[in-house]
Amino acid sequence: MADDKNDTREILHAEHDGMGSFYLNPLPGHTYQLNWTDESGITGATPIAVTKNEGAQLTVTKTTDKARFQVERTATVPENLKKMMMVIHMNQVGLYQVAINTTDKTKVNSEIPIKDLPTGLLQFTLFTSDWIPVAERVIFINNHSHEFDVKMRVPVVNTDKRGKNVLEVIVPDTLLTNMSLAITDADVTLPDQRTIFSDILLSSDIRGKVYNPGYYFSGSSDSVAAHLDLVMLTNGWRRFNWDKVRNHIAPKIMHPAETGYMKLTGQVSGLKKNRPETELNLVIVDKDSSRQFISVPLEKNGSFEHPLVLFDTATVFYSFNTNKTLAEKAKLKIATGMLQLSPTTMASISDPALLSNQLAKQKLDMLLAEQERLANAAAENILEAVIVTGKAKTKLEQLNERYATGFFRGNSARRSYAFDLTDPDKPIVMQGALQFLQNKIPGLEVTCPSMLNCSVFWRRSDGSPDFYIDEMPATLDMIVSIPITNISLIKAFPPPFFYSNSGMLGGAIAVYTKKMEDYKQADVRGLPNLVLAGYSKFKEFYSPSYDDSSDQVINTDNRNHAVLES
Image 1 (cartoon, rainbow, N blue to C red):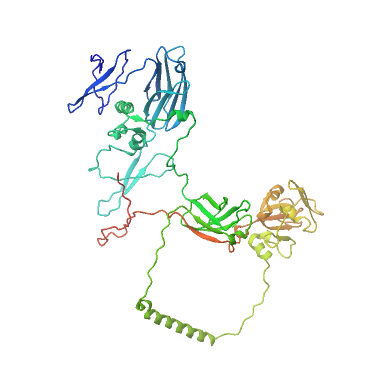
Image 2: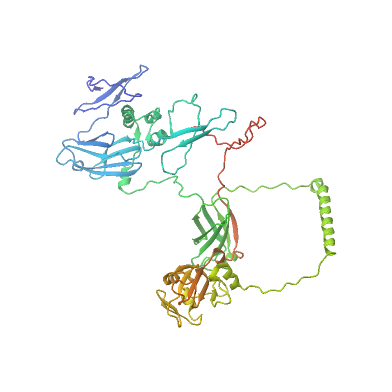
């Protein structure tokens, strides 16, 4: 390093891969340059940027658990450099904001904890009081949080051709995750100059080429950390347009990241333009009979959009909530955003010889003749008609057998009352089971001034009835809280009720909640529907079969393979 008089001020040597560092305290009125000679004997000179008479500088050093920084200004500076602000950020996320006050002094030292930070670049930016950037410095934080120790054992070893080997990888961590494993030949694999860690955490986050980036993650020694800091001093880093940030101008993202996978997009045609606000109701039935109900608003032009992920294929039933007849008039087109294959046309068969199959015709004639013979034989041995008479069970009796068990099922010798609440032709306007029972059963007094204030008792009885939900003991509050639409059967037993827990004097009321098959299904027969294709199931690229160990097996595996290339 020489000054403007070409006097040598210091001899510098590269510390690692052509990189090095030095401290310079420039004198006013002097300029400096680096006169260098490379390993090929080529010489050159690089001037050092001219310093300013007024300003501030930033110095950052790092220990194992702290980052120390020093802000130093010249003796005379403008007012906006006497009170400054330090912003410390990582991965474009602000971590710390430190106020720097140099009104009464020219040097300020401070530190921040870095022990719990993730691995990556930590960026320091020094601003004036009016948020103009003055100095910037980046350091690399490597707390080894990206690493984990893996143990492996090989319980089965077989070096035969197509022999089965078993490797068990043990990760001492409770976190659920997916892992990718790669098996390479140790004899031909070169040392990793690039690794997944170096590509993601280092090379992709700074500007310029990093020579042998895998080296900087090869160990935790002080020399590796010092060499990595030389990369921070030499390469460029991510810069921000702080003027736009200060003016709250967001960057324009040319290729925004997808926030979802599949989505339903569609267009409804045939609707009137002056129609009221309409919502499209979609019932999506997957192959495993699972259902999703979606309600999406329609735009003025009839378009709609809704995020959705489905696998395999699904049937979509649709209707309009404002007018059910709109489904018959309107036409619906739905797409999932997946690639649509163009339809192919099959060539027509014009050769008469290909259209005729005499062997199939003869086989069909033989089957028809045998069918006719069996029909004639059966007609000769028809027995006289047997008439079976019996009483068909009512729907209430069938419902009672399906829900009630044991003592609750009842018999003709024991008086009880039962009510079927599953008949769709008899809509129920009551809100609860007790309101439904009012004036339904002789001798049962039910008063419900409100849903929170109900009482039930039998005339000439000294106790209140026992309550049961699905034949399990319950309280009156629990009975009141069940919506009437969730009840399929109500049974009432006048006293004495021998199954009672309170002395048989109050009788009992049993409420049965609906099973899945008793919920009134949507009349999907009249709903128009269409079929949507979703993602295919997981595909197995390679799964060798070890059942056949003979030499007769084919040597070439023509199945799809996943090939990983760097």
